[in-house]
Length: 171
View (cartoon, rainbow, N blue to C red):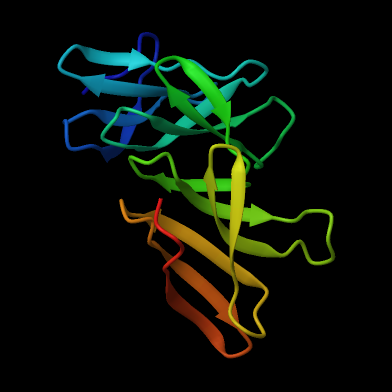
């Protein structure tokens, strides 16, 4: 697929049913998310105020999930949804996947609470739905979502970590 101009490396992370590919181009400096299709590779840019970003997923509508970082954010990133050049902040701490209904699956970390509990969650149109944790657990993590709004991931309790399927109300 190549790289964006001025870069030596790139990586692809997802492909949709139309053959559009998303990934990240960049070396040791700022990284830039890209979309590739029959017209070639194009930079998505970065949201205003952010210096580096990387794509994580694309749906069949060409909407791209991107994580962006500021110069001083360290390892913390802010998820965004890119739709036709417009950026929308996703109200999750980490975003992993999206479907064609605009639902984003990821994780919400409550930094201000003791132990910073983490919960699997869905974001859609500015609303976050906490998917919960196992009884006795303090951690759950969403990794993928399908077109029916079913979410998979994992959760921990006192005895270990387990694969989980959440069946929230369909979109």
